Amino acid sequence: MHTTLFSSFKIIAQIIAGFILIMALFGCGNSDKPAGSPSGPGTPPPPEVEVITVTFGKATMTQDLPGRLQAYRTAQVRARVEGIVEQRLFREGSEVKAGDPLFRIDARNFKAAVDATRADLEIARQTATRYQSLLAIKAVSQQEYDLATARVKQTESAMIRATENLENASVPAPIPGRIGRTLVTEGTFVGRGDATLLATIEQLDPIYVNFTQSGVDLLRLRQAVKAGTLKQAAAKVQLVLEDGSIYPRTGNIFFTDMAVDPSTGAVSLRAEFANPQRELLPGMFVRVRFPEAVAENVIRIPQRAVQAGAQGQYVMVVGAENKIAPLPIKIGSMAGTDFIVSEGLKGGEIIIVNGLQKARPGAVVTPIGEGIAAPSVQVKPAAPTSAVAPATPATSNKPPANK
Image (cartoon, rainbow, N blue to C red; front, side, top):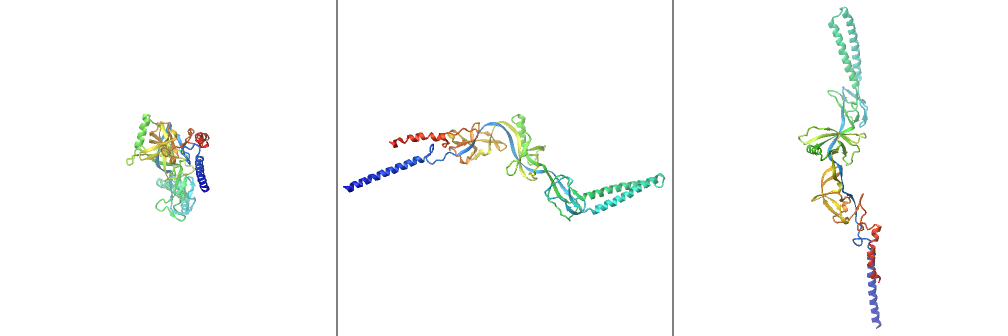
């Protein structure tokens, strides 16, 4: 009997211990559930995304056109006289001024020619003076006097040429700019038969950029401006460098070809940019952000907000209860780095511009951005007011256990 009674108490104790363990596990599960969590235990809060509110406004329609930089002026430094290069007087890649000496050619022969011509000129002038006095007394004929005066003029011309050759033995810079590498070295014989190329100077400030625009686009824009649909934009252009950065100085368009190239259907344009720091170099490929016209009452959105899918382009819109959904759109022209939306948006929509990788259709997000109202309780349970609100219904479920 004692054995049976002991077995009964043992079974009852095991049942009570099991019941206590179950209740403990149930209590721990409730305590692990975060206050205000809408999706159950361990669910993280909705991801934050940066949004903007779609509005209408004025935008300058732009077009990025490929272009290439060209020096403002380019001059080839050549030897004008024959001789041996004695010295190079510049540092390659440096800035030079107009008239600066760049090379010195052996000038001994030119100095000797100047001295000899000067002596010939002195004799010719004395002969002409003497013949003039003899002509008065008929000691020489008029023809002899004319030949003497002609000899003076010939010798004066020879003197000018000899002096120029002596001066050209020192090769000057024809224009200011940056001089490239030298094409000859000391000891090279230059000027025989042609004007030997010694170096090249390029003036880089200001600098040109040459680009083209479609003749069809140009005609369409002119018709839109004439009809009053668009307004004429200022002829200021921006330069987009190869790394995507914007050159800090704007340029002016000052040359437009008056004809369309029949092979390309494009019109040639040229703009000029200040380049005091020599950041822009000839031959660089760039994009010219060309202002086409000014449009009123249009919607513009950042490029990063636009997604592309099988059905076309779309944006992610934050709707009721901060749930997101795709909205198809159509884009038209560019406005700087933004798209101008032609269809799909009516204004007032809240679209995602950053954090799209965390956004899935139907998901709940926490929108952040200028002018966006504070999220509701379901969106951001970590807020102090939201953490208290859900605690009441959670407590109301416990009285039966306390009884």
